[in-house]
Length: 238
Image 1 (cartoon, helix red, strand yellow):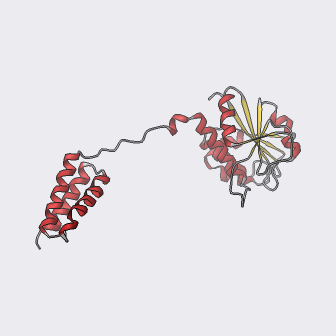
Image 2: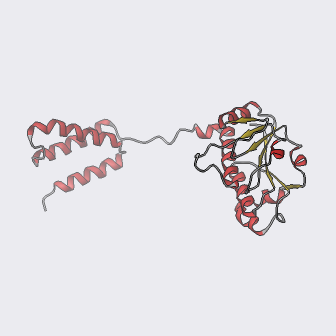
Image 3: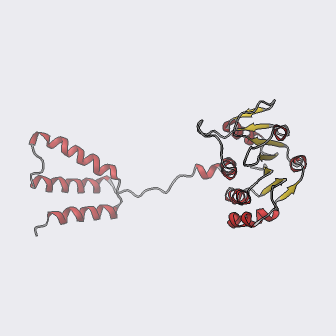
């Protein structure tokens, strides 16, 4: 993925939210952070503390007085909004976002987020190409700023590193069927000797249930030996 993504925070109000945004950006491989007219002296102590290991993103963040200047390096701007706006812009879904990023893999894409209290204004949104709404419960749609940034950064990371998500897990080392059969046969013989299978007409069904249980476990050789030892120890006379 050749796209250069940038996070643009418009009039952020809380330093700790910006620190958390920087941390999420680093988690998912994004580096470019821009702020437009932050409501405090940036960076403040809370910003630095919450950024944890992503302090370099805070130090390299660019601060602008005008939103136009913050967006001029991007080929495409996607704005985030918690609600659908009555504005002449295309509102896109997360699937649309995925397809846009894939299709525009060589473009610089800016993701613009509004202030914590009220989000982006219609004027802010007028500078964007698309408006994206993260799907949430209809009972409570408002997301914390840093949480919204985290979700978008994760989606970008997923698109850019699809092989990580398709990676096959470690193959289990399961004992051979013959070893599992031997253990099961031994257990059934011991149970039969203890007259466990009563009444006699239910013996077949009970053995089927034992087979289903043990074969579903998929134990490895070590686990099978431990299970065999447990079964054998229970059969020993005190």
